[in-house]
Amino acid sequence: QVQLVESGGGLVKPGGSLRLSCAASGFTFSDYYMSWVRQAPGKGLEWVSHISSSGKSISYADSVKGRFTISRDNSRKSLYLQMDSLRVEDTAVYYCAKRTALGTPYNDWGQGTLVTVSS
Amino acid sequence: EIVLTQSPGTLSLSAGERATLSCRASQSVSSTYLAWYQQKPGQAPKLLIYGASSRATGIPDRFSGSGSGTDFTLTISRLEPEDFAVYYCQQYDSSPQTFGQGTKLEIK
Image (cartoon, each protein chain N blue to C red):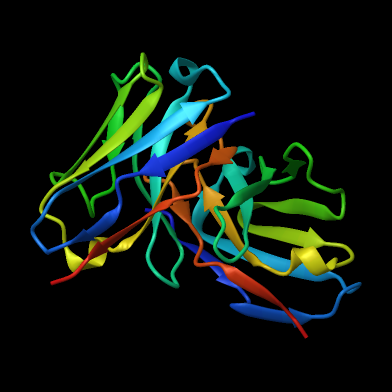
């Protein structure tokens, strides 16, 4: 059974940093593209970043480009999101999500981890 | 960036009724790359429909998707109590992938 478990969320001041992790199990992690998708409180879904199965292809939303860094460790079956220069508007639940490749939907999601950016 | 506009924002219906949710794109989207998700409070989104009309694994056949170009529709033929939730459409045809703002399906 596919499981994606996010961790690392919490309260951070504007300008601060946080590193999110997503532990995967129940599937061959190294075969799949992985993404981070966020949801601000009471709002809709926003794609943040994705990384190819090998880690060689990476893309970011304009809203986080230059501040966030996605990475993965296939040996540890883990996905990461390093978030620097955090802003109040980055406050959201961050989900990791799995997809087969670009051009496919997200067929599995984690339960999410809440990041709150506030002074 | 392709903007997806969902309507209505909120839909109030009773169990047993038919629900029709709309997703309109600001430019043409290949039907191969249009999905629908269901999200219940405190839960992650769940994939319902992909490729505009294909049901994901385990999704009941009362859920159906249709459309092409810029207009797509999610239909729930007979609402069950567990169907009351928020529904999002997503396009993954062009970068960046985008989601609609959601339609809340509430009990009347």
